[in-house]
Image (cartoon, rainbow, N blue to C red; front, side, top):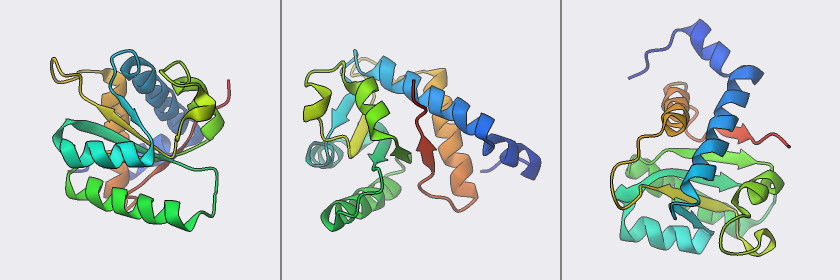
Length: 157
């Protein structure tokens, strides 16, 4: 259910609104990483989605305008699966910034396949995070505008 007026929606899609969603996304990734709630890589994400889709709270698809046909096919399949399982999806540009955020993980950032990143719930409980709520609300509001996979530009630091 969409509860935003046209004016409110236009404000959220303004550059200021998009920046706040991008910052919230950075917070989500930064807090999920030390909890072990990040799955990185197209194949690893597909395995995780297949094994336990109910545990996935957010799917990020990242490109910097690559024309890789195989990657686009993977994205299409992942998007369809996420839509079928009510998993929020975001398209993220600025893979260099994404690598900086996730680079503190297990592998060096250069070795990461950042084309698909899943954020999952911690095993202990349902994750209550205001930043995640903001990102999820943005995804829901975007779907109300028939924008099923909204694009977020991660700002450089």
